[in-house]
Amino acid sequence: MNDTSDNHGTLQISRRKLLGTVGAAGATGLVVGAAAGAGGYAAFGGSGSGDGAALATVGAARVPFRGAHQAGILQPLQACGHVLAFDLAPGAGRKEAAALMRRWSAAAERLMAGEPVGDGDGGVARDAGPCSLTVTFGFGASFFDRTGLAPRRPRQLDPLPAFSADQLDPKRSNGDLWVQIGADDALVAFHALRTLQKEAGGAAAVRWQMNGFNRSPGATAHPMTTRNLMGQVDGTGNPKPTDPGFDGHIFVAPGGEQPWMTGGSYAVVRRIRMLLDDWDKLSLKQQEGVIGRRKADGAPLTGGTETTEPDLDKLGPDGSPVIAADAHARISAPEQNGGATMLRRPFSFHDGIGPDGAPDAGLLFICWQADPLKGFVPVQRKLDRGDALSDFIRHEASGLFAVPGGPAEGEYVGQRLLEA
Image (cartoon, rainbow, N blue to C red):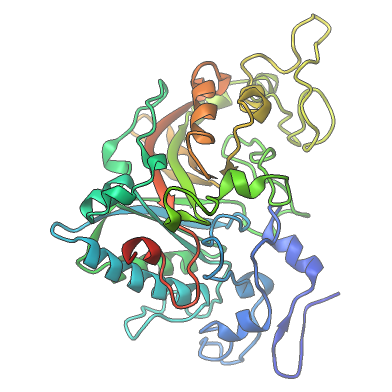
């Protein structure tokens, strides 16, 4: 079935083509079609082309701003993105933070619909539709002291423990407010970044910003798990919304200590530098031994396909485990970590070549869980004690943020915290 337009010019998109463009993570939370195309401010008319042509599939894909959870958690990985933290301005408190979140939420809703934001819109995203844009907001531990809301700070925002592989830059870590932006078009993502930075006005200033990317939708012959900059299939073991207990592992349930976090999640953000020159010196067999999976297709070294469960008890002809004791796949497996579960949703990054000639590149690791002490922390502790991959990576920045649930109609993100 091909894409067609009806007599009103509305884009009709086949399920088959949609699934071929959004990537392996599925189409959870994605809304595409008449509302997406007609709502885009350059999708029909005013685009400069003058022909009023319907948007292609990637451009028309639209993610709802409102819902039980914020966008940018369950949606498929986007081709490009920005993650950044803001600090409230000196003297700014709860009143200024509430006004800022109200402005940001209004802007994000328009941006995610593919619409301009006010008369001052710079037109960077003109001619493009929503392109699966998501904007996600979170609060750091310091936000609660700055706004006089310390009694409402969740215990899950207690500082993460130190790990031996950490070489953290405090200037690129933490922050009062956190924003995650993702889109399948770089200009659409930049437009959102620029708009939110302008909307911050004098209430908050950027503390740090990081830019990332993933494989573009439609770049592979069929949907598949993405690869990281080491060339490894990355994300095979991610939990799925259809898995039993998924919501309980990833989202905060009603009735918790902080009701304003119901439907929310906790994001751990880590800038992980990959020592690619050292990695590339390894043979293919050595690389696969470090990971515990075949590089070609992501299948475990014990056989099968990418989705086959690794046989951690299987021994080779010499009597040693086929998947080594320090292989990343073994150490990070949930059954090796008391069932610890987190949803990973990263971006790769490349910030140029360093003075030593090595690429400043790696992974903007972002993971989601209902409680970091039951998700990220136990897994990272285990990795810290003996993961073979640790010799080829360096954790350079870190942040932990409380990401409230999605806003209901008429609400802004964080309203239940700031106005309770």
